Length: 67
Image 1 (cartoon, rainbow, N blue to C red):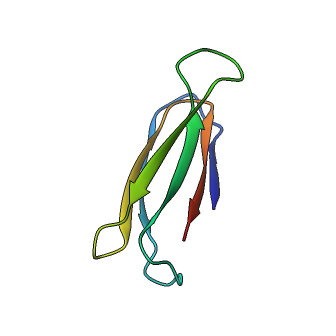
Image 2: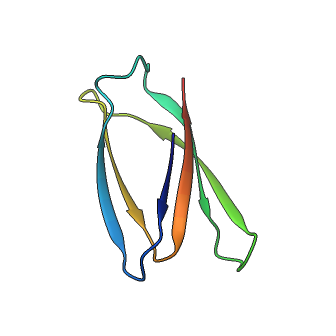
């Protein structure tokens, strides 16, 4: 799954993944703090309700792989 914030404001998202056949853990890749072309990878675990809250900075995005 991927998402892009093409606006100049921070976006808060609540992703409801109950409809997807996921088990609950995976990787989230976002923009890093090192400027252009820096990335941050973190392991995520979905809650029992399979909802995930993300905050996207302006002109930013994410890629997520969930098993």
